[in-house]
Amino acid sequence: MTSLAVRRVAGWHRPLVAFTALMAVAAVVALIGIVADPRVLTGVPIWLKPFKFAVSLGVYTLTLAWMLSLLPRRSRLAERAATVVAAMSVIEIAVIITQVVRGQTSHYNETTPLNAALWQAMGTSIMVLFAAQFVITVVLLRQPQADRVAGYGIRLGLGLSLLGMAAAVPMVLPTAAPGTPGISGAHSVGVPDGGPGLPLVGWSTVGGDLRIGHFVGLHALQAMPLLALLLSRFAGRLDEAVRARLMLVAGAAYGGLTVLLTWQALRGQPLLRPDALTLAAIGALAASTVGAMVAVLRRNRTTVGATERSEGRQGMATMAKGTLR
View 1: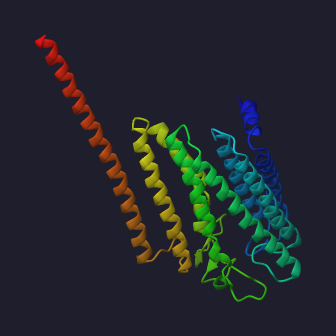
View 2 (view 1 turned 180 degrees about the horizontal axis):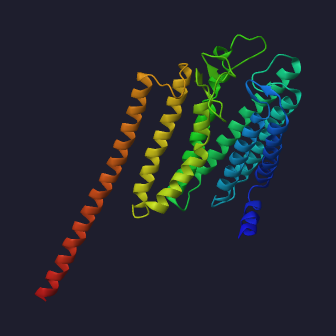
């Protein structure tokens, strides 16, 4: 069964699958580096960033390859765009690993001409990757899916992950520069990068952190299709149209959460220390989401009830005609 699954995955978009395999190797190498290399950069083991990016990029490209395999009709445009995604991802991870080997930060680092060139190459690759995923998103929006709910999951995942990429833009705006010579951006707001942070992810616990909204938005690519699968598996008794509407509600809530987390970070506020305004926004988002879900389910019950009453009346009319005869 496992070999069959491997052969099936190998038949997906080859550049994306090859890059995913490369990231699996890179993640193992980075793990070894975390254990064997005592160097620390920005307050964390120097090989932690390559490890996190290898895992994240590997999951990202594998998910894209899976999505392309679901297209009812082959799209050369989408496949070429996916090849561009793989190529740009190679540049990004190559810069990160090169800078780790050199003992330098990869992001926002313009302290020397070489560091600046590497950072600019990474920034350009990210912009090109964004454009390539946008093309893939448009292609999938135009092609019908056999399963309406799964189709919504894929399209929402792609669209919301683009929103997650856009959430990183404030990191490189002039206002994000920390005032350190040669540093052209930052992911923390109100505090220097590299301060106290949450375990593993490193999100700041003393200031705002733009990586949070970026992370949540990016992983809509996996979260939305997973939600569609769960709805089909555990809410299969609901009409397909109802499940599709629930997906739209979930997508709106997910996008709202991504924006809210980015807004919280821009205000210099740690994730786990929200103020009254942030809590009010979270409550409003939760209440509107629950209200929309209840409205969808109530409409479904009303529609089902009306259908059953109509069918009952038709059945009684048929019986009456039979009796008269």
